[in-house]
Length: 155
Image (cartoon, rainbow, N blue to C red; front, side, top):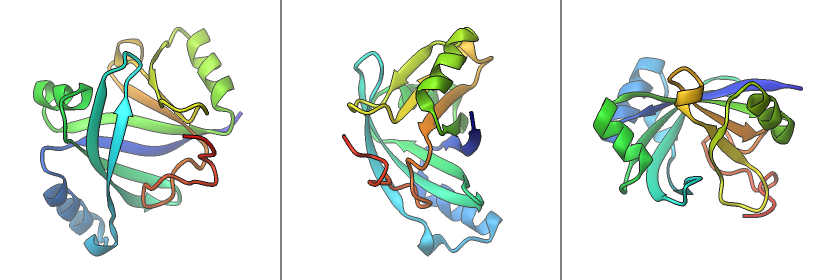
């Protein structure tokens, strides 16, 4: 089974200044970075919206900057912990097998994408030594962070 680091998520209060700062630090053209808005439902049925941007570091490895827009787990995390590391995301060629492997290791799911097809899941930091881990289906996102509709067959 192949599992690869895809991105490191950083939660911020204000996305645009953070994008500008990171672009300057990494030598990226800020105009080439696309800001997206995402709607998410947690495993407990809680809804939230957030804005995000993907900054390329190397071949298929990114920094994701995340700004919560509505109340929800991301905003509570930001209010409680402040800006900083939010999650680490991996992608898997066989997401269902990888989930099974994590669960056998004692790492339960915390939430998943609210889609018919299994696209992305989260593992609770209480079970992963303080780090929220995201597991995504391989090639789920394009390099700018947009959904890859060739992979997302059902939403």
